[in-house]
Amino acid sequence: MEYQIDIDSEQDEIVALVNSAVSGDTICCRREAQFDICKSALVQAKLAGVTICLLDQDDYVIRQTSSKKRSQVQGPRLTDRQLVVIKALERVLAHCKKEGVALIGYSDELVALPAGVAPGDLASAYAVEVDASGSYRGAEGIDSVNLS
Image (cartoon, rainbow, N blue to C red; front, side, top):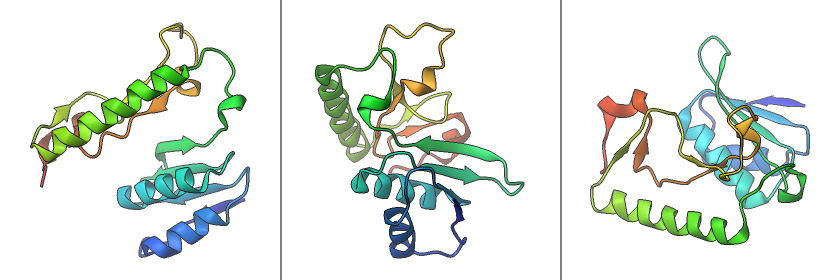
């Protein structure tokens, strides 16, 4: 089923909607902050098979994330040790923000991929988003870097 989050929905309403989602559900929102709340709630609830979409004013999906159990991902995967390294990187990036360092990139999100993914493969199936704690900005955010 597809659910639309009202533009004025508060955090507790959004979290409740995510917590009530079941595999196959899609939750759509129009605000970046709502998208981030949805992603956090999805991870915390450990739900698999739920998709979160950020839509623009023309209902075009500009960001999307789907949850899967690790066992559902086919092909090359990050090892447990690699995942530990990514968590350490996330802690370093949190310190970057705390110390006023911004990382500027030319993509929407920072992701980690196993080295064995071929360029022709669908990389998004193997990607793990890195929680940069707000210290990483895509090219469209370059003018609005604010570390406070």
